[in-house]
Image (cartoon, rainbow, N blue to C red; front, side):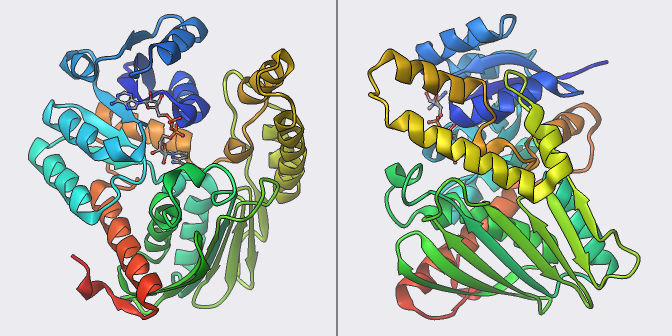
Length: 383
Ligand SMILES: NC(=O)c1ccc[n+]([C@@H]2O[C@H](COP(=O)([O-])OP(=O)(O)OC[C@H]3O[C@@H](n4cnc5c(N)ncnc54)[C@H](O)[C@@H]3O)[C@@H](O)[C@H]2O)c1
């Protein structure tokens, strides 16, 4: 079977936790080349995955006619320029979120995508999460989403997001949720109200053209054991919830499954028992895993970071155990296989596009203005 030939550009934490493993185990894509500026990263990857080419030169990757598409997972500042360059060189593009930090930069990518005639997907991967795809279909059968509640709570402000500068959580993380709210309601946002009493913790209310509303609680102060995400949708009549991508419930929705669990996500180099564990125990399984891994992580961090023991334990955590945030299926593998289907067969695009990323960036800007000025912001005010 013909496979889409992909290069991963930016082979850091996310690429190693998700895209590389997912491409290698996908039904329809082949990992052709690793591209990174860091030769140490490339050497490590070539040792772990023999048979995949490696390059520090993005232009060389783009010039290779064997490569059909690039998966860009560099940091935020390089997403838009690399995506534009790849599109104009005739490559299909899967690029991580946020597509760019401003609507203006997103618009440049929309323009390049349209001029190039190539496809571009953005890694707002929740649209491809099995639980969310099913949730959307169920809610549609019951008249569509009228009111949404979404909680996203993680360690952004106290851990991994600290390097990005305070106040950026809306741009880097909540863009996912603005996108999934548009996906669930199939409608455009008309007004945004964002309340915040400390950096990187917000309550946001969205009003949609359809009349639907969404309320988002985003907090960066939730330690690792906290289940990260909860979606709640009220349909015409009846309620649906999804917890941590692995457990869906319906309440008062006739002829629907009352409770369904979704398997965890597996990585080709790592221990996999959590897949079955989450499939069988759902949220309870995911929370148990979070508590256990958070505990191990905390213990490892107390070790002297220059010691051999720290390196060994850290390596075990990073390369053998499931990563705490990547153990439930948020749609990463589905997104990669969908990208390959689009390249190979021209499949209709169901994942987030550059236009969707632009819409998310505009909502983000409205939220930032609302937060600063403590008022409801109309999307008509936003470029
Ligand atoms: N979709 C998701 O759920 C999700 C989850 C986590 C992170 N992300 C996004 O993924 C992106 C990467 O995050 P990360 O934590 O892996 O970052 P990282 O810093 O660990 O990795 C980035 C890598 O890109 C390389 N790089 C930088 N500039 C390059 C260039 N011009 N050409 C080639 N390589 C280059 C760096 O050397 C590094 O290895 C971020 O934008 C982040 O927001 C998305």
